[in-house]
Image 1 (cartoon, rainbow, N blue to C red):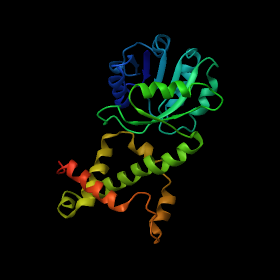
Image 2 (cartoon, one colour; image 1 turned 90 degrees about the vertical axis):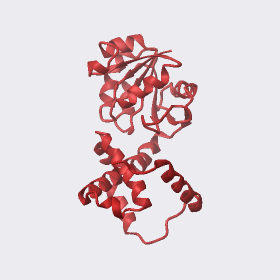
Image 3 (cartoon, one colour; image 1 turned 135 degrees about the horizontal axis):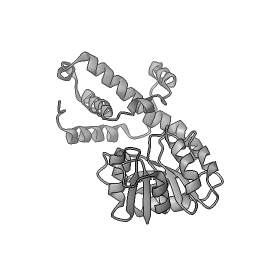
Length: 250
């Protein structure tokens, strides 16, 4: 299949690398150094399937530009947040297949094989079944998601993780290098995650979606949390992760 990816950033480039074993893949990016084609129109006319892999706040604009070029094609976005994105598919002709998708991993993954990808149908439109098959054939672990629940949970998982991580990175940064002398295993684990976020220039945009007031409310509570996974198993996995991380490199 001829697959066109809009967006040649880290995720778009990673997807191209992973898909070339099965598909012919080209990228369009406004940065010509990242682009395989000269224009969005050229990419759309060439492709049988199109994946919009730009920051979530730019996705709707790209979809609007693709709508008149989408006849007979499968079009998918991978935006982290779907509000304001899914509505744009109403501009697409009925013979376009559309679906909204969320890869639950980043470009640091070694392979797409076994990685979870949520597939969600656009209300009133065909294309979700084709999207499910597309990602499954790549070796991803495609799963059905519910669009009406998606942003609620993503704001409390991905966005909140970003917000907490960035706050810790700021705190540790203010404390300086001596913090490493006094930090133990939990610090090592959290600091590794927190500082890893600094390689993402868009991290603050994701953090803005976090329900901070709700989180503060939970910080103030004193009741025992409900264990959704076995604490003993989690503790063992925590130490395995620490062993795999090795020493923090500075």
